[in-house]
Amino acid sequence: MDHGLIKRIDFVFHLEKAIENGEFEVYYQPIIHTISGSLCGFEALVRWHHPKLGFLTPMQFLPSLEETKQIYHLDIHIIEKVCQWYTTLKAANKPVVPVSVNLSRSDFESEDMFRVVESMTQKYGVPRNMLNIEITESAFSERESLMASNVEKFRSAGYQVWMDDFGSGYSSLNTLKDYVFDELKIDMGFLSDMSLKSKRIIRSIISMAKDISMVTVVEGVETQEQVDFLRNIGCDRMQGYYFSKPLPY
Ligand code: C2E
Ligand code: MG
Ligand code: MG
Image (cartoon, rainbow, N blue to C red):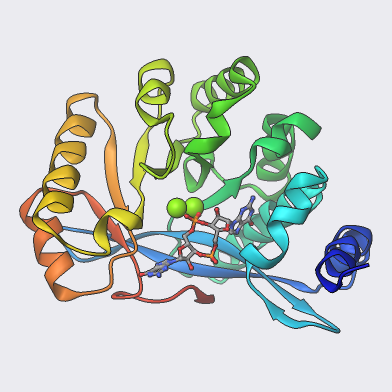
């Protein structure tokens, strides 16, 4: 068997043990309010301290967990860790900001994620407006009714649902038409070259998002030039290495 396949099988078979052993860590990346420059939230991003393979980033293990529909075990664990983090800070009278967690489409196929999130937030006393749900736009390319009912359930209960990676796939505009999201995260691919054309595209996306009452975040912000540009065009929030890489809290 090739080496990559062995690794992928290892990820899937050892997932539950790895969760029990505490091998996963949540890294937090700040989200910044453009006008004030203040911190307005964090995105929770998982990291794996694998006993044999060392430090792993999501792209190394998420695809195998998604393909085999095992990712929900990990996502439930991450939601619980974020809720515990909130409770610990609150108990210590430290300031808290909302945290967004990433959910994959297969989470919704395997579990009733709304029920899971509700039971976690109730168990740890986390207000619904402190936990946001990020779903990548490609998750909406299939199983539309399942995704629609979940987005609706979360939103009507008082959670914010954000569309992640807007512009990275092909289904974006249809998805925006058919669903209601609170926030639009624009894919960093657009920012990478800062050409006149990409600037015009971002400006138009931001103006369109405002027209349909969505808050805008651009992720992948790395330079002062990008910050100045986003501030000029009225982007609400920014996230990227310019402010901080994802880090342990
Ligand atoms: P995402 O949700 O779009 O998260 C943003 C990714 O961009 C993160 O990669 C982050 O580290 C990276 N990033 C942030 N700022 C910059 C920047 O200025 N420049 C560049 N080049 N990159 C930047 P990461 O942490 O490797 O995560 C990759 C993807 O894995 C995430 O993309 C998300 O889709 C997924 N993911 C991460 N954690 C989880 C999780 O707990 N559950 C699920 N289901 N998916 C997760
Ligand atoms: Mg995300
Ligand atoms: Mg993204």
